[in-house]
Image 1: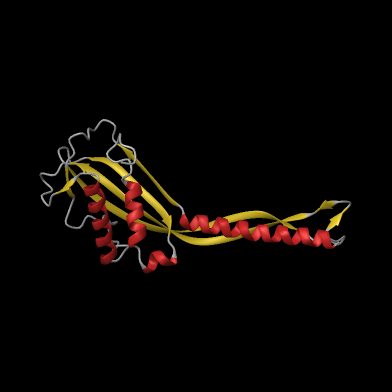
Image 2: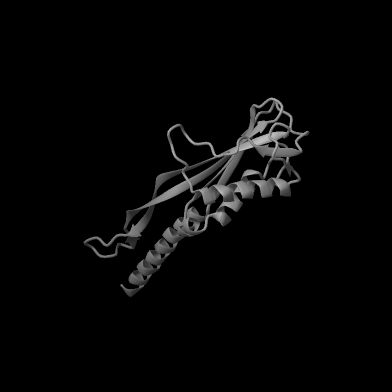
Length: 199
């Protein structure tokens, strides 16, 4: 009986570690992607600017979803990343090779995880050498934040590229969003301009 009890304790410990692992990996995961107009050309891109003095795009009647300080951090991070990739910022958006805008969004999400747990039925922990298991379901509510960036061609004034990054917003993100913003911006522009890979 003690051996069965020890095995059950080990299984319970592994289940707890599994739940913690899933929760922590969910909090740390940064997803990103991009798509673009394949008919557009990007070889001539050298300079960039913002599409407007206020490049954050918000819905009609909606207020900015983030603070002015966070908006400034996003703008600074994007300018720094593009500069690192060899582009030159110009305040003259009419002469820039491409212009940018960005969007920010959040949404509440629920993640459900199921895993087997040892079940102690009326016959004890096992019957004829077989173990019985029930199913435990863990629900986790979290906030997912998404940063999207759009690139407009300076000549045609048409949108030609869109990149995005999403991440679960943690307590540390709320206290200081700068590190997550920088990581998101780096991930967004990883393959920009189209045809480059992680430059």
